[in-house]
Length: 176
Image (tube, rainbow, N blue to C red):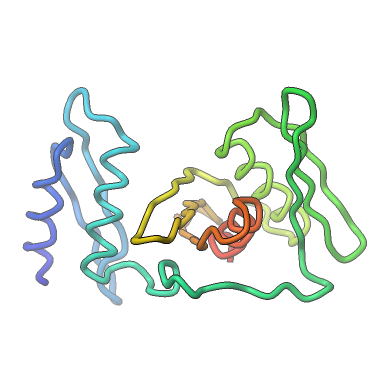
């Protein structure tokens, strides 16, 4: 697919006013989207992501159904549980733990996991921007967008045995 063809297909998505593709030495490095008036941002972004996956412009490892990670004893582990009307998010590893109480939303939990992982690993400038859950065939894919040192990155994981494990894996991939 050509860059012009990709831009035309993306501009054809309902809710998109215009698309600006950013190119680098290695090819496509970014996409700037201008939403049409009244368009729902999350819906438009989901449609754009689905098109990018369809055309193979997203790293295959982020959507492969069998993708998983085995955690070694010294790696970080995340636990999320209800704490009254909040969520208690604990990320621990290497004898340390970071605990945050957050609103009971997936984005707040993802941000707490990202903040704790960044603190424990020394990433000074890491922030979770967005979280989404997609259905691909019979698999549910949890995707996280993050900003690390000013660069937007993505991570995804298949939800197999609960969303906490998938959230932890997706955030870990997004933060690098």
